[in-house]
Image (tube, rainbow, N blue to C red; front, side):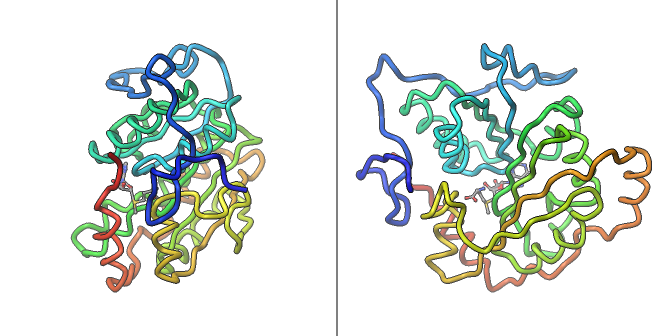
Length: 259
Ligand SMILES: C[S@@+](CC[C@H](N)C(=O)[O-])C[C@H]1O[C@@H](n2cnc3c(N)ncnc32)[C@H](O)[C@@H]1O
């Protein structure tokens, strides 16, 4: 079942979850400055200690906001490198009066590498990471052996990593890498909590009749971090064919619709 929504706030014809609240009830969800040293202090940031969940490359925040509304007893941080995307995410979350969400402009790899205390996250969500079609850009692909190790390090033993893409090459690469540290359960059907699409990109890709690849990865118990890093170094870098035909979708996706 989809969440209550504002029928006037549509994205590719699908209502954005949540309804605006009165001006007095609105919140401030922008995290303007990340720490320059040390771990991010989630409990102080949110003003309460709740399970911590990260949405990496959150785009305009549809997934983060959906999940934050579904789980008000968790704290949610959405990260994207694109200031415009984060502005839209912040505006919508503020308008909905959400107290358990923050958004920041940052590099998703850097956040995991530098700011997340080991074994501290309950969930990491990664929806449609940028495929980067040009060979000169493939070094920017987020999922790498190092990233898998970082995600494992960041998650609690009962944590979960949600992954999703419409890019077959990226999915095959994730399938090759994730078993390093995770057991992956693949899911064919849309997430039951977001049947019309968890994210903007999923909605667009489904309208284009693309296959969506999804799964929930759970950390393998008791891996030794040093051994894990060494085994990661033996895995291939993210050099795969991302299929340039899907590029036009990125162009459509780039035109944000949130006023
Ligand atoms: C294909 S879009 C998907 C957005 C959203 N997750 C969705 O499913 O609609 C990929 C997003 O990842 C962001 N991105 C790419 N590389 C990133 C990085 N290293 N750190 C943070 N965000 C990144 C892009 O700015 C873009 O918003």
